[in-house]
Length: 569
Image (cartoon, rainbow, N blue to C red):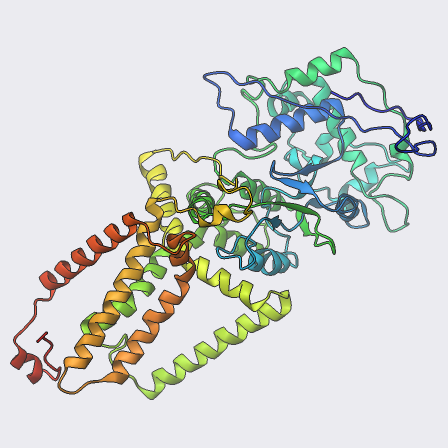
């Protein structure tokens, strides 16, 4: 623990031969390393529990009005970003901003971004759009919070409480923000720490916008934060140790209403949703120089497991009380739709799976996807296609996303949608229906064995059951193209137009699976033996299954039905 600096500037001397600090204030901010208590029988609630422990200990030690949240694999790349984030909350009209979310930028990703690790469409498209609504969702890192909003209070209603604030900017009491909260019930919500309860009103007061303009009716006067604070004593340090003990949260509202919310592997989304549901709004801050940078899993297996964890959390949200269908009236309509999409998108894997198998089914049966092609249907299909393309172009141009990034996002959307999202729905249903808890391991983001190649981990082939559905889709479509091609060659009247129409959609599916196929090949372009075995077993199984469902008929009857006979010489 590095003690808090004094209020007076401390100028350095010229004794150091390397650097001259004679005109530099060499005071260092307080730094505290926290290791919370863990015991058998107490659920430490993983990352959410750790963040709540940090909130309580920092409230006792420093009680800063704003909190910066970074993952362990992220670092500050732009030191001025913190000031920009605070400006949103301290400027005029910023009293109802609960957090400022920065985009995630990553290092160590291959130049082609094979598995869409940059998430460019999400961070430069979706999040920018949400900034025009009630605000972007909280993504777990690179976010600056207002401490008072983390305590579970509603945003201040300036038109109702500004009359209670005198010209000196007297701090309000928690009851002024939550009429149902009695001072005697503070221990029930926040725990039995008196110092923690007293720090709440101070954090609210210090986080107000600066009242340097007549239009700011709900603010604090300039210079209010320059008042010297009392130095920490042994009792305060002991209290900080007490609030991070494993028993402190018992019979309190930490994790239920206060702090980071428990009960989901995506505690970040749930925490942001609870704040928006109370009427707070958030801001998306994109700086010219990246605010923070971090690392991302560039290996196919690790990337799929990461997406699986996110999608499983979304399924948990859909089947919990955090579903946007149950939101309060303070959550705006379009923001509600955005949160509904967060919980529903994994279920689209079923439709995506059907879409991937439909072209193969068309080639196997010899019938086109639709029974008849009428002018009305073609016009409808043309209009729908033009609208989709125009919407995609508009989104790409507006957000500034490069076409290659957009295409990588589309490819990995199909890969993850047919594997990780499908598994997430199954795991989420098992947890909701059968109560089976799903355990997750932290995403591995270390490089491969070759230290000289920063992309060595990209070429590692680590087998996972998540790879089975995309392999099945790819093999089925390849076999279907081969079967349809052979049928067309040996038919009496070859219908190449029908084959070309069906094969186009199968090739379109295979084009999306191209990064997945490259991931299976590894560095040397050789397919692992286990993939060959799986492909062979799947091909044989599907062939036998198709023969048992639709056994071949006599050649004469096939010709009479209008189709050419199909047999090998």
